[in-house]
Structures are given as C-alpha cells and as structure tokens.
Image 1 (spheres, rainbow, N blue to C red):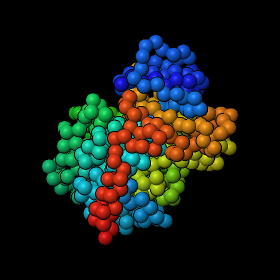
Image 2: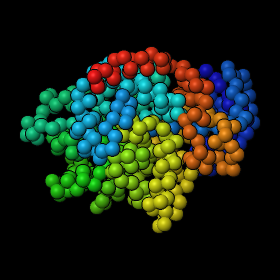
Image 3: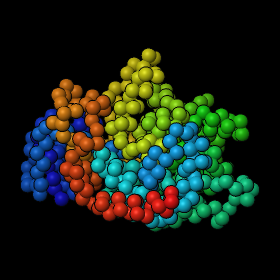
Image 4: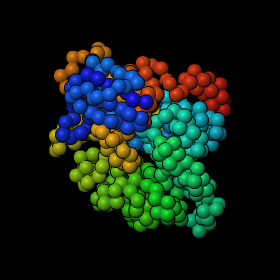
Length: 434
C-alpha cells in the first residue's frame, strides 16, 4: 500500500537533520520511499494529514519477556533473586501454550498501543510467541533463554531441553514473515547455566549465523558470585566459551567491571538498559556514560512486565534520562533528549541488526504518529524534549509496522483485544494462580 504523511513534523533520527517540520514522508509497501520538503509526485492510496502531529520511528524495545504480562506486579517489593525463586519460577512452571499465547497477545497489544514496532524477546515456548508476533504485525528477534541446572559432566544437547528448543525455533521460525521474525541464540544468564551449555550455544550460533541474547551482571550479587566461582566476571567467563563471537545483546549491564565493557564493545555486543525494572528490583543503575565511552552501543528495554510493570518506552526514556543525570551528571553533564531517543530507536535497531529506527528512504517503514495538540504536549518549544519528558502512550494515534497500519485512534487492526482479555481472564489467570 502507498501512504503519504503530509505537513508532518518528522523526527528522523538522522544526525544531519534530526527534526524536519512540514515534511512529506511517503511509504511504498514495507519501506519508506521518500522524505522531503515538497509533496512527491504521483498518487497515493491514502494521505494522512500530519498537521499538529509528530512522526517518528517506532520504538525498538530491545529486551522483553512478553508473556510475563500475565504476572504484572506479582511478587512486588522483592529483590531479583527472591522475586525469581519465590514467585516467578513457580508460576512459570504452570505455563502451557495457551497461557503463553494469551500473555504474549496482551503484551503485544500494550506495546503496539504505546508505539513499539520491534522487540527482542527471550522466553519459553517461543514458537507460540512467534506466531503471536506474526499475527500482530510487529518485528521480533526471538530467543528461548537457555538454562541448564544439571551437573556439567552430565550435559548432553540431546538431553538439554533448551538445546532442542533452540534447534526447533531456528529451523521453524528464523526469517519467517520475510524477516519479520529473526531468531537469536541465547543463554538466560551465567547463574542459570554452566559451561557445557555456553559452549554448545556458542557453537550453534556460529554454525547458523545467529546473534546472542544474555542477561549480564544485572545485580551486584550475581556479578560477585561469578567472580568468586570462576575468578572472572559473567561477561568474561562467557567470552571464554565463545558466546560473544557473533555479537548480540547483553541485557542490563549494571555491574560490568574489569574491562567487560571494552570486551563486549570489541565483540559487537550492545548493552540494553532497563531502568524501570532495575530500579523496581533494587538492582541499581547502569553507568551509560561509561558504557558509551568504552565503545558500547546502548539501547533501551522494558524487561518483563512482572518487574516493571508496563511496556511503556516513554517511561523508560524519561527514567533513563533522570537517573543518569542524577547519578552521573556532575561528571558527564546531562544525557540529552536526542541521546535518549537514539537509545529507544536507532540504537535498538542496530543492536538487533534491523534496518529500521530512522526515517530515511529505503528504511523499513516502522513509524508512529503522535498528536502534539494533546494538553501534555502543548506548547512545544522543543520536540525532542517533549517526546522524552512529556509524552505518554496515550499520545500515540497511529502505529505502522513494516508499512502496514496496525493501530489507529485507539483501534487495533490486527488484534482482537476483547478476545485477548477474555482468554487471559477466563483461562490464563485461573490456570496460573487458582
């Protein structure tokens, strides 16, 4: 379909011209066809009047656990390890495919309505999530989050469920939907697995050209216990097994030390900052200025709703800016609105190896439209400042993913929200918590 946005303020994320007022942005099929100051020639199947509105790249939520929407707020008030072992792991043990499908659909609806067009998700029963993503219309890098709690000497890939899950996920879903779904190799974390799984997953990633997705140094306790056990940090001990050879994403990175950031930067691994989740679980604040100075690409994620408690990327941007400015601003100055927007868009796209996150010809048409006539966005002295510090999900009036409008003016065009709510209420929640 051909669509023209006319007379719109375009936040392009192009360093040469970050904000273009009274712009014309044309979309042909799944790609952006042109961006300019004059109306392009030709006819369009739809013309969208952009006066009073801002068009920007859709958010790239670079670290999620979408079906955990079912556990929104469950086990609140705990540190990470207590929360995981006393609340989350027992609930997750009850999950079946139907629960995961319901939770994934609900999470995707929340993301779509708040402006997300691409995610990196790590969770179990990943094929079910893949189908939900395909139906919803956004793009996703999916991983199963490999775990292995057995004795290292007893490990075999045939007996490790997540090795088999990784194989099935890759063979069935990698590249599905003309690249809408990509599969990453993954290890949940150093503390939930051992070296035989790390080596197997690294070898599998090398053989199939997959990137990696891992939780790294989320808490000080996790980081220090790894040092005590192996004499090396989580990043370093995983590197010894080849985990980072193809690059990828390291979620959290709150407590990197001893050359970790430089190592990950060298391997092409992006740090995904999850500020709200890290604060809620009392994990800490990642040193973003330091990570960038070491050469790391820094993106943003929400983590799972159970520890957040939303998929609100506007909140992540504002929280990231405020916590960095408070904790590190005296030495580094203020984290600019432009920097934060990059983390939520173009940096996330780079982290996921996606050709999106920028409004430019040839890029994937992952776009969101915000109504800047809303009271919380008026007046507007600085578009970028308003986006980071004033905007909210309710300001999103359109979500276009891969050139297709999937949400407009409060209406979902690929999802049946009432059916999703009924499935969550009548099946998933009783199944997990009755």
